[in-house]
Image (tube, rainbow, N blue to C red; front, side, top):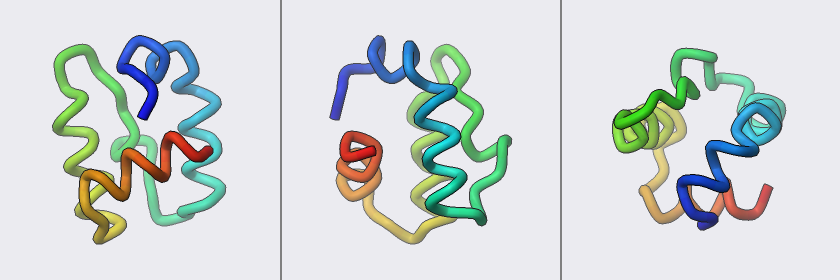
Length: 62
């Protein structure tokens, strides 16, 4: 997965792609707040039923 700085820099684009691919994700699920990266990843994991590694790969592949 790209590092957190790269993820933050491209987050609006990445968030849009995730919402297109997984319509059940909400803006609240994808809220990237400083210091809350792990919490956001946990929300995505729970919503999609995937492991942390699967989510990281999914985001890296977008």
